[in-house]
Amino acid sequence: MVAALHVEFTTMIDSFLLIAGLPPGAGWMIAACLFMGAAVGLTSWWVIRVLQTEDLEQGAEWRYDVSRINDLRRLDFFYRLFQPLLQPFALLNRKFFRNAMPVMQREIQAAGLPRCWLPEEYLAKAELIAIFSIPLWYYAFYKIFDSQGLILIPLFVVLTAWYLRRRLSAQARMRLHQIKRRMPFLLDLLTLLMEAGSTFIGAMRQAVEEFHGHPVAQEFGRVLADMNMGKTRVEAFQAMRDRLNDDEITSIISSILQGENLGTPLANIFRTQADVLRIKRTQRAELLAGEAGVNMLLPGVLIMAATVIIIIGPFFLNYLKFGLSL
Image 1 (cartoon, rainbow, N blue to C red):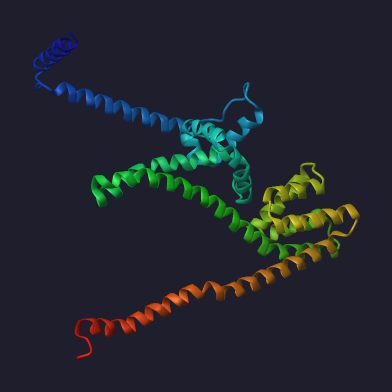
Image 2: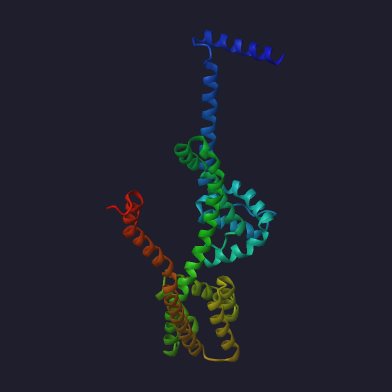
């Protein structure tokens, strides 16, 4: 029955095409062109709507979350373009990777990314980029290994998502390293300014301007912004300690907070902590220098073995082939 209807419908379409002066079979080409045009039009409409989209309206949703999403849409073009696709992935990440979310949230803050990023959304972004890389891996492996290389595509998609996740951790470590290298100089500047008669707020503001653009200035600028918004000095430094979550920085901030509670002048605390940071930096350099010899042992042994093989190898092959006659 269905086949008969299909044949009758096809015959009717071909009759209309003959009346219109078109060859039989052109109907499917016309239908394909219409579907392709509709797909291109829908994609263009989506992109234009995304680029011209306005902020979300405040409704029954939590107001802070709506404001966070609006800020993220302005800051990140990828999120703005693919927000409808990111939300389902974020829900899955929140369900299956719940234990990893706190660690990732600390890394997002330590890496200096916008505060409006949620860890599940950032992980969803990495996963979506990995999925979009499928055509690239398909082209690469199909060209090299033919159809047998297709089994490598899922593996490299997972590796792409893993690499993007590890890159966040590397960014956080690098930024913390930059902060710890520059913090002694900022503390020295704060000490000089406060001993010269400047207030703590004024000294902090001038030091942030002096180190403008550096991660250490960004973090102390956030401390200054928190105090300007009404937080106490202790609360602002505690927020910085929780944000960076590094042992050395935690030790320094704890000493500052303890001195604040005991009434010790901040200039003396800053000078002491700057000296402590320099001592730890020297100790770390000495430790790395001591480990360098051990780390170079294996490459040295491999180079020596390769050299011995290059020198003795021809004589050994000559002995195996000709014996001692030559």
